[in-house]
Amino acid sequence: MPSWPWRITWVYLTLMLFLPLSGMLLKAFRVAPSQFWEIATSAEAVATYRISFGLSLVASLLNGVFGLVIAWALIRCRFPGQRLLDSLIDLPFALPTAVAGLALTAVYSEEGWLGRPIMDLFGLKVAFTSLGVAVAMVFISLPFVVRTVEPVLRSLEKEQEEASWCLGASQRQTFFRVILPQLAPAILSGVAQGYSRAVGEYGSVVMISSNVPFRDLITPTLIVQKLEEYDFQAATVIGAVMLLFSLVSLLVINRLQVWGQRYQGAEAA
Image (cartoon, rainbow, N blue to C red; front, side, top):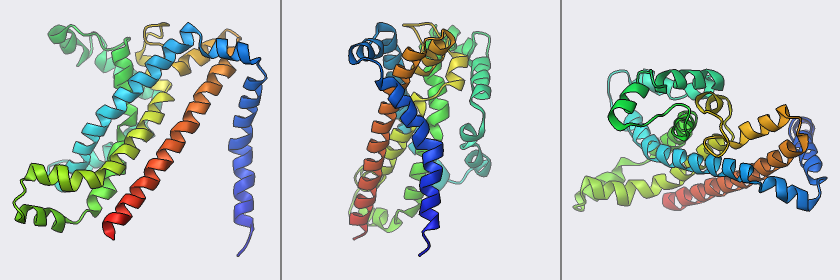
């Protein structure tokens, strides 16, 4: 077997991925431990962690429910405009995040198509609040659950459902006891991927957020603000915290994927 593919892989990933990230971590760890802790746990930084991580969790869980419904509709149903809808699911992947933020702000502002009715009916302001941040996170992370669940749902054998019905189970019992357990690993994996994506989102969120500290300021925006203030040390430390969190998230995602593959393998056996 030729050795050049893996050699090129290591060189390319080292130059494009490992060296930049290692450089940032080394620069962050040059800060004295007490000062690192002070910056990373400052009131402003902790408030952004709470908003970024908390709203990302809410958005990913919401997408876990509705992403499953959308995937089910695309695979198990036939309806007008199905192919168009299927192609539009991937739009958040291709759409520049700044454009997504502008579109969401226009729709959910106080004079927008949805912002005004929501304000009149429920008294809720969406744009330039934490609710708008959550909406942006839902928008950009939705495709992860749909595209992760779709292939698993497509591969399920309908004979299992038919056997369940023959044994007297209702459609609800069949779904929760036969179908959902097989979809659970894919759902969790999609939720985890969407969560990681939402935590690191900047372009769309910065447009629909007021970016006010302790209100709706997210961590990536705080990093940019620190850079604009020439506080490179604080930006590097907070960036290192986000990087470490991303690494933990990737480990969790990989574990979920391995668990899902083992689960599906056990089911097939």
